[in-house]
Length: 340
Ligand code: HEC
Ligand code: HEC
Image (cartoon, rainbow, N blue to C red):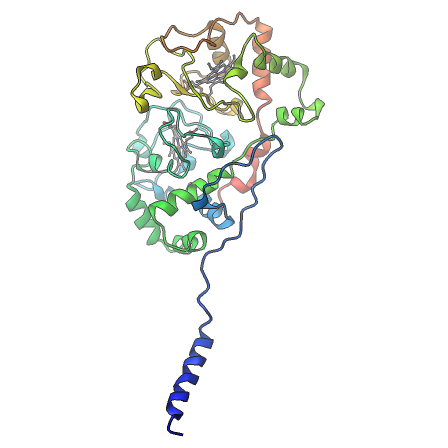
């Protein structure tokens, strides 16, 4: 009997541990089922940020939350609007306190596929890109550390971060959650897609004529705007200016041969994302076609594919009609991308 207290201690310890089930990981690893349209590859997803439903949901909440801007006035969606294929409708979008940057806000459709981010390719990974708008003086103007502090002091976000990453908000988890949401913004259900996937009726004759011109040898658009996302991901000078205020790719490489080169942009949903070019200087698709038809301005770095095209008025109309067939109306109305 002299050992009774020891057994009693074991019994109590056992009962206590039984009441405290093994601490379950707070992380919810349910994968996110990413649907990829016919003809699209599955995007590369970094191993340290597997796509889960909790991460996508958290990223979406953050994307729409002005908490990430200095004065809580603007969210990512302020410049990247779903109805406009996650682009904006002004040449340069105002950030906090109405400050203006120097580039036109691009669509976020299919950013999961971009090899380098931003028009000059200055950012190598989608997971790092959100640092730029959050900290940029002319965009959200908030230090990442301060963003993280706000999120960890918030009544709702700490639980969301635990579910998504098993830990609190950090610069890593904040930026990776935003990237997870953006990876789901895939657009590949335009009338053009339905046409190439064997629904002959989904494009009209004018659009088909425009398509043949676009990919043919007369207009040569498809030599740069190439493949399922209408970009070969290269940096080119398309002859917009004789002198560039924004040197484009040269800002990153410091190589004079890169002055005026910008990443060839996707043309998906292009009818929704006016105005056009890196600075939003061309207001309409008509102006874009006039630019290419003229052969552009003389610049030492101008691509050899840019030269006068001698298009007829009917050919210009058909090209514009074809670009209109690249609008994906299901993308801009998809409730999965809307603010909750
Ligand atoms: C004030 C307007 C503004 C806000 C707010 C804004 N962006 Fe942007 N975004 C831009 C502009 C302008 C660019 C083009 C930058 C460049 O090319 O140098 C851009 C580029 C991007 C790109 C690169 C796309 C590409 O084609 O390379 C991504 C991704 C992106 N933004 C995501 C975000 C996220 C996420 C947020 C919120 C954290 C955000 N943006 C907030 C204006 C904005
Ligand atoms: C030499 C490669 C090249 C060729 C050929 C080319 N483009 Fe482009 N395109 C570009 C580049 C680079 C840009 C971005 C320039 C900038 O941002 O200033 C661009 C921009 C555009 C834009 C504006 C996109 C946006 O989001 O602002 C449209 C529309 C466009 N091109 C359509 C066409 C059409 C139509 C043709 C054929 C007539 C064509 N392109 C031929 C390289 C090319």
